[in-house]
Length: 288
Image 1 (cartoon, rainbow, N blue to C red):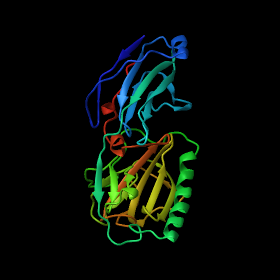
Image 2: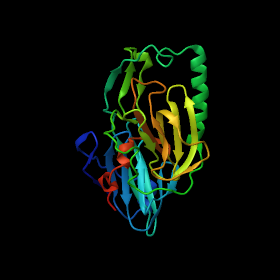
Image 3: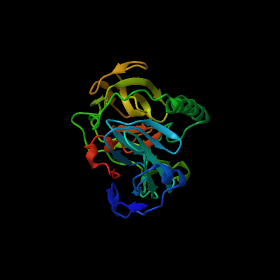
Image 4: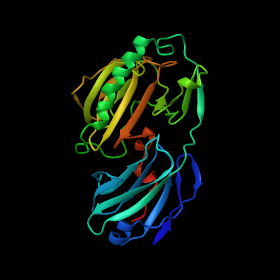
């Protein structure tokens, strides 16, 4: 048996959900209907059932957060149907997430005559080294969650985060395009930037394109990122508390002016950080 579910996701008006029948293992194990829900890349789907202890998508699994499974959809995920499940008290539950094509659009960005706009071979080698350093963070072992939802604000006062998922085209050169994997906050230079939740600074360093950057591991596979800072207030390996200053808003790296780039990865998926700053009840949900 399969059923359809209608939901409204950020950027999707009147999303229609297609029903798919259960796979062989689902038909043998699950006693509830298999629901399919649609989602855009970079968003989240939740599934709240009392007694839920573990969640999985494909071959990857993790502990539930307060008896709720949160399934983050990577920003670069191509259209596909993802099979998800929840386990705990009672029979296992199965569902499917139909990932739609990205609809974020593009925008031209004009950069000044800086090394980040016209990187030399030496700059590119430095960036490759930076990326190798950052890539190691995505394979870290996932520890216990040190946060609850919603997360805290990255600054006070803050502003509206913009630009997530948009393809930036730098100086009119399509070959230099890049999908923007965070939200940009227009804040005055020198504004304190604060941790979204308790965690450990796993990287705090000046990187070529991101400038002064801080990466915080909050457990449960959640890593938050704060870029373009003028000054760093933490060091690698340092434990931080929710709301603790991490640095100051600046314009280091590839920028057109002072702002904060806030990004998050959850279970390896690049998602819109703004979704975690709001009431989790607003995240589209699968039925029990």
